[in-house]
Image (tube, rainbow, N blue to C red):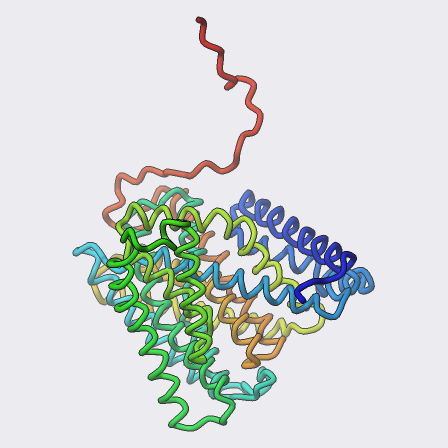
Length: 447
């Protein structure tokens, strides 16, 4: 019943292997060039997708990725599973507490960088014809919500990876930005879940449907962030909890799948359930166990599922034919300027210096993973077409590159990212595994 032919399976495994290899190798090369890894992983999909391989060698592309009628469904499954693993990892990075002296900065930026860019993005849809970017569902309200989110969204995984690469993950600047990004994106993903619920309703757009979607999404948010952690705190370590005793990691993956499934049944996108599953796990566990879950999930996620997700995003892009370069440049400038101006002047209003204000604004512009998630979800449920899908993906990649480049420049110039990091000591993680080190071979002890 759940079988497939040996030939089809062999072809699918070969296609997955080729994409995984391209995503990981180009991701590694991107990191060596001081570029966010996600850019290289998407480039792996561009290399093997219709943009390059499909454009110059269409028969090879069709044989590899469209070789049998269910192959696209299998890649769709891998993409969706990679997405929920990415969002689960993002939730596990959630920081719900600011240091007392940082609370004013955090709250000010969260409010300003969420509300104002969202409103500006919504109003911007009256300056051009958004109908040109409508997807198969033909829902203008949902499209406007997606456009508004794309102006405001910030990336937790990418900005955290940039900080890790720069060796500043332990700094005050990093703590503030990661904390802001966590709360900030929860709010914006509520808006995306509402747009998803409107589309899933298939009833046309009316006030009742919008209120229902808002009510269900907010209720699910409260359930996942209040009730689920409360329950987990009380049942996880019980001796009668044989699921936890059977498999530490399997237990939390079950929670991930359960909340994703509940979200799907409520017409809230499953990726939102996976994000909240990560947050609920983080809130429920002591720091030591939460770190253990994060480390365990990260290993398999960032080696397999997440590179494949970004690679499949690249496979879906066709920059050779479905990409409006002129509009993209204008959209990139608009989104960057709006978020930069809002965050910069918010920080100046609370008496931060000019450089610190601009550094925080640059970091908040990295749209990275959540920007790509926004594009993928909106495209997969028919809110946007392939042209706007490409624009949103390239927006996420371009802004992440710019943010990382600016922060790297500030550190190399010896300037402060923020007051409080005067004695900054760069603490870079080990960049690669040394498999052969002749000088490090242990000498046997004498008996």
